[in-house]
Every structure is written in structure tokens, then in C-alpha cells.
Image (cartoon, rainbow, N blue to C red):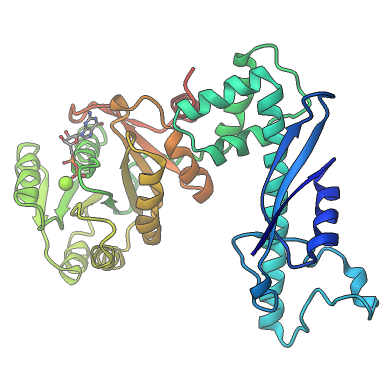
Length: 378
Ligand SMILES: Nc1nc2c(ncn2[C@@H]2O[C@H](COP(=O)(O)OP(=O)(O)O)[C@@H](O)[C@H]2O)c(=O)[nH]1
Ligand SMILES: [Mg+2]
């Protein structure tokens, strides 16, 4: 592989230089804004590479492939190198269109990145805001995406002014899911989430609120036959609160029980918290979900984890199409910045937050303003 560094006045000029030197198959590995120490003038430094062994092979999707599909003029110029292989059928056409869209998107991101890096290094207020975001556990790319969405020409008087604008962008990425309300149809809700995330406690909180405040007819069903004492603990709590309770062992039993109990106002179903990377566990949850025809599929995640944990958890639980998220243990979390990217990328609505171990007091319906402040605190 041939790797070379190019310095240009702007990205377009840089790309032209690369194409002239390495050809159409070159790929961009990185780009950044640099400053001439003498004149203070800014330039773009681009590192590009050419994998000579793979010139004739499929493009590598993980890099930006330069000039593929940018100039249509080559179609009418037989001497120019054809930039698109002949399109044989609709499937191939779709696949190439998708690849071109991906490339366009990557170039736009690259542009944003350059714009943001410039802002972060030149503007003290933006720099302070960026550091604040990282301190609030935002990952780097989410922080940069928020900064890129801010008004680049605006001069903020202080960091608070910039913080307000960043919060507006964050707030527009938050979707609030309405809390439960008694209706004349039976509502079935299932609670999914990693071990210890607070599924059982939250289910009990909501069951008690439904019974005490809405005077609803509530039933709790546990499918958590895995954790020793998991179902028994819930049964004891249900019995103290005089809430109907049953344990089921299979998806077929769950289906039958839900049909039998369809006159209840609310049926809350608890699930086992096993390793979410275990595909068999996710499959068994999928069977329970299919059996229950649930009106609410709650994903329960505690607010004290890293973005890496959330990404990994959502990779598994996202497949079960949760209808909303319950964020627990807000009282143990300094900020929810690490959670923001999965909320935003997956447009996952938030229905409740829980703020402590007190049952049933420590639960609140999600509120956009409060969540925004929890995501990016002062
Ligand atoms: N601090 C705090 N602890 C909580 C909250 N919700 C649940 N917990 C605690 O987290 C632990 C695990 O909760 P549990 O409901 O059993 O989690 P599950 O394994 O997902 O069912 C218990 O000790 C709960 O009391 C909360 O909002 N704040
Ligand atoms: Mg539990």
C-alpha cells in the first residue's frame, strides 16, 4: 500500500491533488486542519493511500473512496476511465446507488469534521463546550456532530450561551414516550434489559402506581426462572401489595395466560437478566415477546454506564424492537451523555426515569427539559 500526505488550501483542492497523483482508486485515511506557524494561514492536511493490489477489486467500504461517482462527465468521454462498472440489473444498480450514497454521506461527515476541528481549535468558547461534552461522557463523534449542527458563524459571548444552543440540538434529538394510562383495553407490558438494570424494581413501581393511583386491576407475570430466587422475590412483593401473580416457564404458557387474563387493565411481564451477548437468551426473549403481543416493550437501562456498554446492549436489545426506554439509577449517574448517541441514532423514545430504590416513589415520567439537563449538565 502506498500512503502519502497532501497539504492543500481546501478539501476539494486536496482531493484533486490526490486523484492527479494516485488516481481514482485512492482512499482518504484521515484529514485535519493545520496552521502555518509563520503566516498563521490554515491548510487541510490529508493522508491518502492507494492499495495497489486491490485496484481491480471491490471498493473498501470503510474508507472514503475518492471521486467515485462524483463526475458524470466521464460517461460522455470514452477516453476517460469509466468510474462506474456497467450496471447489469436493478439489484446491482441499487447496490451501487447505496455505495454512492454512503460515500456522499462520508464526505459530508468529513467536511463537518474539518469544520468542527477548526472551530474547536480557534474558538475558546466552543473548545470549552467540547471539553464539557467529553466530561459529560459524550463520545467524540456525537460531540462533534452536535457542534457541527450549531451555527458556525455565531460568536457566543460565553460558554453558557453556547451550552444553551447545544442543549437545543440535544433536545431536538430526544423523543418522549407518554406514560401509562388506564384505558378500556387491556395493556400488556414487558420489561427487558441487562442484569441488575432495575427491571423488576421498575415493574413493581409501575404496578403499584397502576393499582394505587389508577385503581387498576393489575397482574404481574414472571418469566425470570433463571435467577435463583428471582421469581420468589417478585411473588413476595406482589403478595404484600395484593397484586395477582404467576410464573411461566415457556412462551406458549405466557400466550395462554395472557389470553386467559385479558380482562385485567394491566399485565406486567418481567424477564430474566442474563448475558445479553448470549444469542440464545435474546432468542428466548423474542419468543416471549411474540407470544405476548405487547402494547409496550420497555427496555430498561441504568444511567451509569459507558457509551460502549450502551452500544453493545442496544446491538442485542435493539433487535427486539423496544417501544421505549426506561432510564434507571439516575441518582447514581453524573450525566447521561454516554446514552445520548443510542437515543439519537435509533430514535428511541424515553418513557420513564427512576431516581432511587424507594418503591413506588422513585419513578417519574420522562421530561424533555429534565433529560436534556441530565444529558448535558452545567
Ligand atoms: N440507586 C438506585 N438503585 C436502583 C434503582 N432501580 C433499581 N435499583 C436497584 O438496583 C438493583 C437491581 O434491581 P433489579 O430491579 O433487581 O434489577 P433487574 O435484575 O434488572 O431486575 C436493586 O438493588 C435495586 O434496588 C434506582 O433508580 N436507583
Ligand atoms: Mg429482576
